[in-house]
View 1 (tube, rainbow, N blue to C red):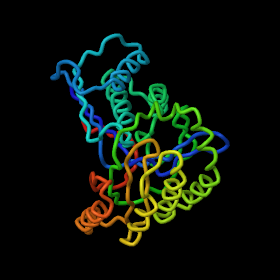
View 2: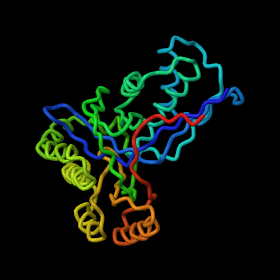
View 3: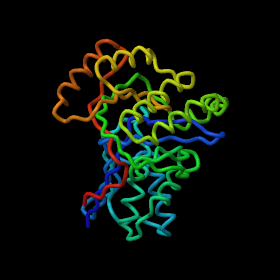
Length: 286
């Protein structure tokens, strides 16, 4: 028996904020993954951190099972503490793979509830692009258009604990001050073009500056737009920044060149990789 499940990470969020006091984020899944392998040819537990172990225990409890009879291995392309949905991908991939192995596959809703009970969840394991309450695990809105962005991902430095970040006493008040920007961003998302979605992400990134500051963000935005970028997205509770480009596979080498120019212009940025936005989901490989 062998099962392999993959869940994408993210480059932050397309939009994050609140409306009428209700917190939300809009997912930004990318083609970088956590992979969980379950097999009777593996012995023991390998690669699972604290949160993914919690996912294993909670999944078994939900299924009414006492012992997990197989070996399990987790590997990931996603760094922790950067806002790339590493924990959400780990938690959901483990929950999905374990439930399949036990013969009782969990629904997306069940995995969402399980994940949000462990920590504020990103939701990249949900199909397509969605707006969800990342604290309660409620899906608020689905978006039909999947932008074909190429994304140059940069790290602005450091690490941020998602749980600690969301426990700030004045966070709700500061986020609520930006609700007019969130309305504009959501209206742009609903227009469903690559350009309008990039503009929405850029508005959200700039509006978030007094909540989690990204150094020189306005200057970076001005520079990348001169290079032909559509806009930027950020991790609203993390350290990554994404530059959004029109999708054109034939220009991928050129985009790497542009990314190096950006990193040279702004030496506090570390270029991570070139990727592209995809539909979220849980992908069973084997």
